[in-house]
Image 1 (cartoon, one colour):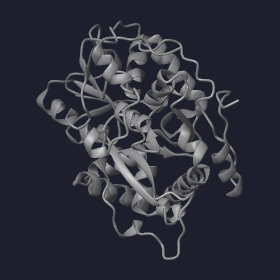
Image 2 (cartoon, one colour):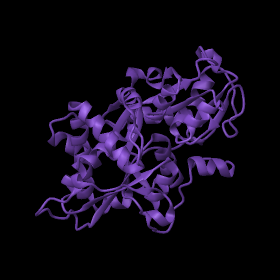
Image 3 (spheres, helix red, strand yellow):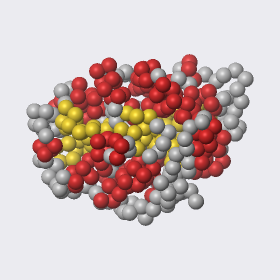
Image 4 (spheres, rainbow, N blue to C red):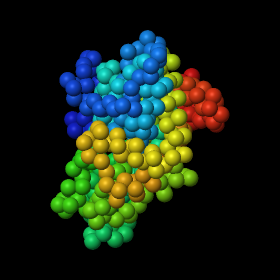
Length: 370
């Protein structure tokens, strides 16, 4: 079933995904183009894949998207794509990336589970497929220790999440409900005041005292800690084996049908990148930070980068069972009608790549293409 049709703000927040005419990234405002550097030059003698001039890849400037950051910075994607140019665009929010997928402005994207679920359900299962995993963890509840000393003290306070209906917003609303507290999901008002605040301005909101804490991803969580905040809860502790999907890889369905070799190249590069990240964590951390600086003009200081990096785990497994749970949380919060997620995954190419690499294949929790 498709998502409910709540007020305009919610539509913008969780499901602003209607198909739009094909436009350039600059014109449609979906994201900003990532700068190329010397590591992404096409190798001499390389050939195009599927005759494509380019493959357009989207991601966020978060460390939970470090597979894409590192893969871009170290040239893993370009290496596998040969003479087909790896073109990048960065986004601040899931709905804008879903719009870009729908319009054809990007082909493949790194994205959180909630916008992937909404994109799939709002299109009646026609817009995208989840084709791989990327990261787990990296989400924390950070609070002002002068105002909040224990979990029970969160009641009555103002806590920020990145966006109405985004992955962290859904997680926080579910946690609130588990405490037996009541909050109206759309307005954010209730026993806790949920303040939807862009990650870019959350640290300033915290410093000014307009919020008492925030439930948010890295590196913003560690930015608040650097401002004197305290980690009150790591979301990973709420999940079995401390694992939950925070970043998936999605693709336009028509691109998957028409250019499977290009999709395979990107997935192969993703698997190689994750392997390299896990084998060279310090070098990978530096590469991710260098790409963040290239994309945004500002690198993260060590006091933010180091703790943020430690809390994210990089994995090719999409952790499909946790996606189902996150969808249930959105339904419980009243942000989504019970969705039919059958077919949201197509892990065929990923498992082909994993087998070729001698790695274990991954499952789709019964939500794969029939």
